[in-house]
Image 1 (cartoon, rainbow, N blue to C red):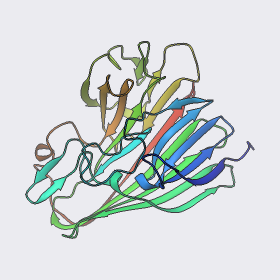
Image 2 (cartoon, rainbow, N blue to C red):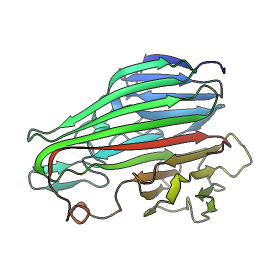
Image 3 (cartoon, rainbow, N blue to C red):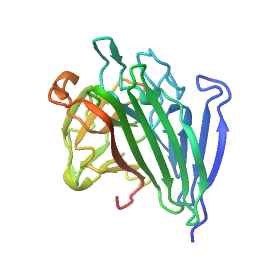
Image 4 (cartoon, helix red, strand yellow):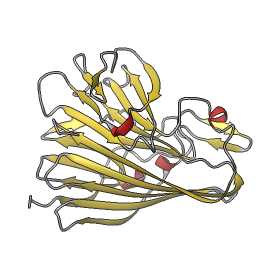
Length: 295
C-alpha cells in the first residue's frame, strides 16, 4: 500500500483570510490540497510536485460576506448554487446573489481522517435557509487517494420547500491561472483540441457537455508534464459546460464550469418548473486531476 495521506487542520494568521479554517491534505503522489471549511469546503490552492493550480485575486481566499459584489472566487474551486447560479437577480422580495448562496456559508466538518486504504476523507455539511421555509443542504465528501494526483468530490444536495419553485441549480467554478494559463496553453474537450480556448480576450460561452463524462484537459504547452490539469464529471447531472475568460484578471483567469443549466435568464430557465412540495435530492460528482494522468 502507498504511504497514507497526511492531514492537518490549521487556521490562517493575518491577511484577508485571518482566522479562517484550513484543512491541508498531502499524498505520496506529490499532491497538496487546501480545503476551505469557511467557504463551504471549497478548494483553495492545490499544488502538484510544486506547481500551483488555482487563481487568487485581490480578495485572497477570505470567506465571502453576504452583499459582496465579488463573492469568494479565489482558489481552485468555488461552488455556485444551489438556489441560483450566475449573475444576481431579484424576484419579487427575494434577491439571489451573484453565484448563489452556498459559497457564502461555513461548513460543519463531520469527518477528517485517513481511511484504511490510505486515502484522506473529509466530510462536511453546509446549510442555507430562508424565513419562508425554503432550505438547501449540501453534504459534501472530498477524497484524496494516497498515490494518485486526484481530488474526488461527491455532493449530495437536498432542497426542501412548500409551494414555491425551488430548483437545484449548480455551477462548479474551476479557476485556473498562471503558470497553467499563458500564451501557449492548450485545451482539449472530450479528446478534441479546442484551439480557440482559452483565448486571449474576455468572454463567456456555454455548450452541451460531452456525453459520458469525458474530461476537459488543460496543459501549459511548454512540455512540463507537471503543468497539466484535467476535469471529469457526471454529465448526466451536469449537462452543460461553460468557459469563462478574464485575461486582465490578475494573471490570465480561465474558468471551466460544469453546470446544471444553460446560460439563460433565470426566468426563462424556470418558466415551466413546477412548485416543490416536500424535498428533492440530487447528486453531483467531479474528479480533478493533475499531471499526465489517464482521466
